[in-house]
Image (tube, rainbow, N blue to C red):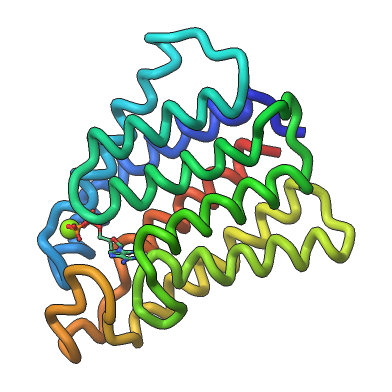
Length: 208
Ligand code: ADP
Ligand code: MG
């Protein structure tokens, strides 16, 4: 079961990952964007990781809500509002939940991804972070359907996200800054799909 502690561990883990991988994420964004994705994520998650030092949280939903609000206000560009909305919507799925099992986490991920969709209006194949999230959700739900526990379902979701991320390389961007490049966006992995996969890999390490 995932407790509030699991969620704060998740955020702390992910903040460390994007700090360590900031140069890599920025390099990906240099190829098809404006070379700020790593810096955006490292700065935003760095602030988010400090939330637990500034305030004592007692509920998963209140914590995730603060995470989302912090990302919306501290991360510029497309990714701040998208990740911010993800956590804000996810928070809404945990109202009254003290310990989250597969069912609750499934609902949380789905709500979060619906937020990304509402905000960014991307479709599968547009070469965005949604190309990691869509297969991840599907894999999570199908793992749950075949009786997997939370750890196994998160591992399956992270693996599917990684595959979706890799497949963005062959796509032409139809949303976001990379879409300005048209055909020249092909041949590069999408930065947001990469950071989203890292978020799920981090969840697989910490949430279950
Ligand atoms: P910006 O493009 O404003 O510089 P970032 O570099 O931080 O912002 O983030 C870029 C990432 O945001 C892209 O790699 C892509 O995954 C994601 N993105 C951009 N637009 C959209 C959208 N409409 N829907 C989903 N994801 C998007
Ligand atoms: Mg950018």
